[in-house]
Image (cartoon, rainbow, N blue to C red; front, side, top):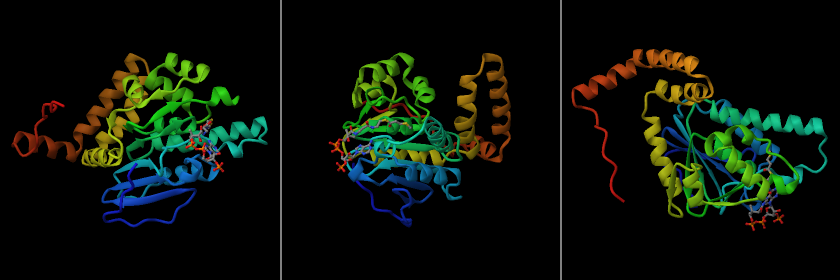
Length: 272
Ligand code: 1HE
């Protein structure tokens, strides 16, 4: 995937193999350990938790991407050798905390996927809100073959995206999904040519950043809870959220702009 020069932002000191660049209201967060295929050691997971627990205040959306030829090779297997059951449990809970800060944090996250998106790398991708895949991307859960189970929230997030049946197949048989198969299964929202994923993700992040903050909050925090609840509580949460969102000045300004023909219309999709 093509690396990007920071347009107007600073490049902060890497922590836990992470590199942050700024592009206006967008932060570009890079898994920066290409020689180990961006495998996630404890430092990287804690770095993700730190970043997403408190992103810079003026950041409105984050693009998460990987350096080198792969998005992420999952858990750093070299750290796994001498853990007790209790340590393994605590380790998994650490991943859960970090990835919950991504899914239920304060900023929408667009992930750019290329090359290997496997194991914990796929779990990480599933915590993002939007996934852009380049045609080089491939998806696998080699935990089954390594004598492990998912531990980064994969058993909760992945079935909600592709279904229990597909995840069962991936884990039992070691099936690898191509980028096209992943797109078909719903793993990615967008599929791009090689080297075009980052630009597409930035374009999407800019569109997301331009939304009213409370609309983005509702999508990130209310929508998944509604989808997990029964019809009656779901409808009530929806009504509460709708009432709050529409009462915001940001909503009133946007509605006026449309009625006064100052806002864009919904456009027909272009033919490809
Ligand atoms: C690693 C890791 C890793 C690479 N932990 N060091 N994940 C996996 O089971 C995937 C394991 N990795 C691979 O299958 C391949 O490395 C890839 C398909 C991702 C890339 O292949 P390739 O040929 O480009 O690279 P490589 O030669 O295999 O790896 C380059 C180096 O990265 C090499 O180290 P070196 O010191 O010999 O140069 C590899 O050992 C190292 N490397 N992947 C540690 N994962 C919360 S629970 C989550 C559970 C899981 O994620 S389990 C799945 C783990």
